[in-house]
Image (cartoon, rainbow, N blue to C red):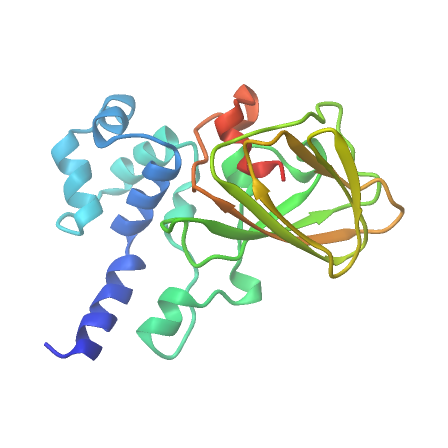
Length: 222
């Protein structure tokens, strides 16, 4: 097998249903054993699905999706493209996945609409586009922390970023990078929509993160 064949095989494996399941399980911070217990499906069967050695029935897929608190459609990302590498690694604007679905909070409750820009959530970090409506403060606005790093750049509008004891106003072209263990939060208090591209590590989106509001679940609150 040539190097080119190896790359193509890797692209196919990363875009498979099994890979999507494995990525979501890890993002929910669950082991195979934990997911098996929650879903009531044998560990060996889930492992086989993740490895691409078994195809789940519709019932099994629905059960796994419910255990991971996502819809089954999450595992079938729309991947357009002429070649396998483009299909695996390029995300067209119209094919972005809705991260609010993973948070279990809509834009009204969360304060912004979040879309996944990364081709997967299986890497060391993930990247998204947050759109804050004018005056998008929520009753639960609070400082958050989590392990890892958080980075962002404002594309348009104005964003109020609280970092520790300081409040900073970010305008188009302004960016930030810091240790996410520093308490922080962002909101739009202006009269215009704000768009922010962000990147966060590590990729951990625990199940029921929205309701628990645990520090490690904070990757949604830049």
